[in-house]
Length: 414
Image (tube, rainbow, N blue to C red; front, side, top):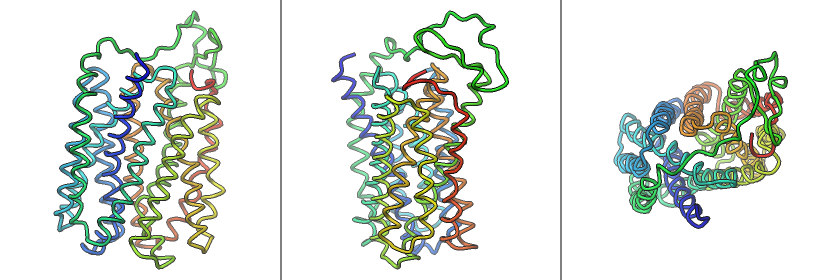
């Protein structure tokens, strides 16, 4: 495949990911307006997040499994169309139930878009898989950042009724994805997943041992082979890491604006601006983590990015300066977010030929964990205060210690 074709496809999908995730974080950024205009509690705010995350997390793995068996390129613009409906509906929402229905459509749009888009990026990336996958992921994070900025510019002064101003973005994204869908349909039969070289090992060489390290056998040209138990054990560890990362990020996405308003008395508009800066740091970390993982190995990126965020997260609840709170938050977000592309690619390489399923599983798990966490954190915030929530969440990166149990699969590939 020509490099220019690959780059055009990945950049288009990156922009589409930007648009899709813009809508996701946009409605979270307007939580202060929704809470004030609809008289919502923190628990209700958590249920709004849960509705979005539930619809996306339940449907994403199912979409991934279905498209692994029979790819459907036109799911890409269909996902954006569902998000368009949700954004249009939220601009007219006048009740808690109407908001839930609106974000449900946005969640369905995310569920339909992510597995097929992630799989197409995987299939066209070739040797630069880590870079292109992280570029695709950073598009989503930049979109999420812009969602907060759009809220600060268009919604803070006028109210959530102006949300409909974002619908032209969805329409434009649907239009530019159509040529990609046509190209994907024409070339579907000649596109194959990257395959690992075959090993000449006998079945006895692949029997499970009592620990993960002893389940690794050296293959040709430095490759490794994992036993079935080691593969599933590695998957469980990766899910634990997703658990720690996304609960922490859910705390920030749903409640960071409230935290800053309560502790420092700033305006809603400024709180959304600081959320925008935090999300920019997340997007930058995602891009850097994927690129570095191609060279030093995904395990090391995962190790540093989860556990390495702890010194910053633990300091945030104890500083009493708006400036340092924002600086530490951005540093923690940057380091923590660098893990996701490495975790996703590590898991996809464990299950070759099941790229869509793994993408759906991990995107879905991320969204599902974040949704449930938002409700639990909302209940805790209503009872004990928003500052208590941030204190508890600051300990979550310690789960990064489980990275020690992951087998070292080499530099960027199995």
